[in-house]
Length: 365
Ligand code: ATP
Ligand code: MG
Image 1 (cartoon, rainbow, N blue to C red):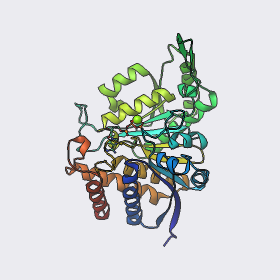
Image 2: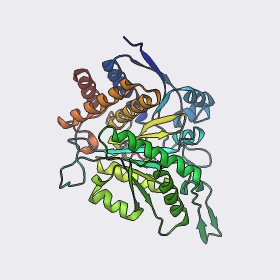
Image 3: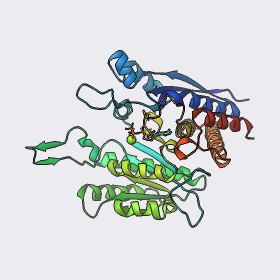
Image 4: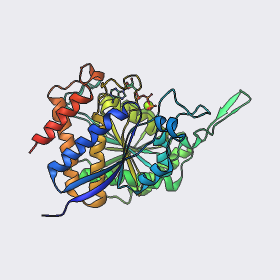
């Protein structure tokens, strides 16, 4: 028998519903790992967020950063609360700080429909959605974050920056994702979403995209303007496989994608860099429902599955890939069999979904 592989996972429960969905997620990941065998996750739970800021005066302690850097992967639930802010009024968002500290340049947001979960789309072809939005996360319009200027209460200005290095690395990440998906039956297609007809920055993004795409002759590519892409998101989203786009466009398209698959409670994400990666649901801390057990932990579970998949690729460990597939299958089966969470009009929350997913993980062959 091969020896047991251990991965060190840094875990940030954060605030609000983050505190409710973290332990269930670790239980689900552990159950899938032990189901597969030969795989162990060693968790280190770390403080960060609004609660941490109140207690120790910093939202992301240095010790938490060091531990996150040293870990094989980082699992983050949700952090920040509307009423607890920095003295200058800005939001506490350690997840955004981690993105820049660890240089996590690719925001990966899968748009995968779950059977039984209602979607606003009426799909005439009856096909399920399964595509990925890859958002550049270090530059674009967000270089202007907290740096825009308002002059004499008369005009305001922000900056949009697209660099060769920033674009090359995110496009390369999108190409790798498309190639990996192709090994599992994916289309091997990458779409560049931009506004190259109007802006020099987006034309440059497209030029770099074409240069990098030429290095991947087995993949097919196309370009769509951002406005036309929103039409395709609601009109024929099954045309997509992997999308790569600038930071601001990616911000908008990932929420649009979450809307297509039932809402924030179902949308996982990963922020990936060359050395580190953070896995977290797309949603926030949901203070309106925190502490009531009403949160849907599915996005968190699927983020745990993405983490296992990434570990599998990084460490050439197919068992982690199998464990990821086990979680996705258990989630699908749970909802296909009638599970209805609060935000889709049902009455099930953290406990019910967790129990159902755990019992299916134990059942699946
Ligand atoms: P952030 O700024 O941190 O992204 P936000 O203001 O966008 O936060 P969320 O915390 O994501 O807001 O919540 C938006 C809405 O979605 C809220 O009504 C919340 O209750 C609901 N919601 C978010 N996550 C979940 C979940 N996992 N289960 C059920 N409802 C959720
Ligand atoms: Mg939000």
